[in-house]
Image 1 (tube, rainbow, N blue to C red):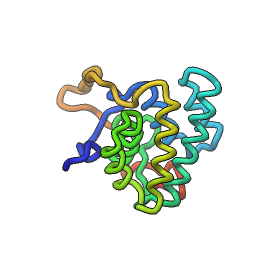
Image 2: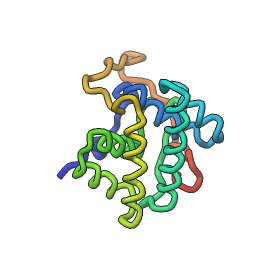
Image 3: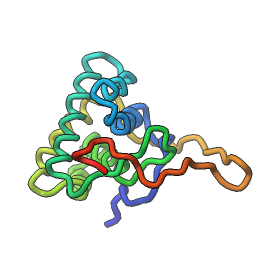
Length: 168
């Protein structure tokens, strides 16, 4: 069985507003709680925004306690999602679609067995609070190549950590 989180790189253009909010929250977390909460401003109402933020913090805490390894999270403005970011989004997507088999497979890839139930509960709660799925159903806009031969990309040795305990 091939899991979608191993399909390679994914562009933020393949995400809905909810997906972009989650990625931005992960990438801004090193700036503190206020910066992370500000990422949730794109969601519809204040109540939903704060609830999503609290569940998001629980997910990060669960990753810190039960993650198989530290997650690699991209820097703000990185044009591609890291495989770990895609894996987390696939977990949320499986929870939103109520696909128990896919959710179990994705969760098992991200966290250890002893934390799987807790992590699954948080993912299900977050998926129910988000106003839409995290991935677009139709393909996003085509990327424009810059400079003739290939797309210009920022030079990063490795994605920067978002959570000192949970990711590297």
